[in-house]
Image (cartoon, rainbow, N blue to C red):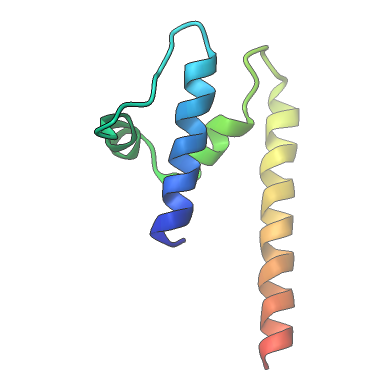
Length: 84
């Protein structure tokens, strides 16, 4: 994952957190992104973006995880087959 994509994920997470009652505003210095990068890997940030505030059954969270794995593998195989 390149730096631009990582920055986009962290910015989306900041916007999401800012929409919650706790607030997490954007700053001119970008310190909020540095904090998020310290607290979350890019993969963890993506997981947070897919979680709901309302409790979910672990089965639905697990299904989301496997769905992402399926799409990732599909993309890798597609890319591999079309570059060789």
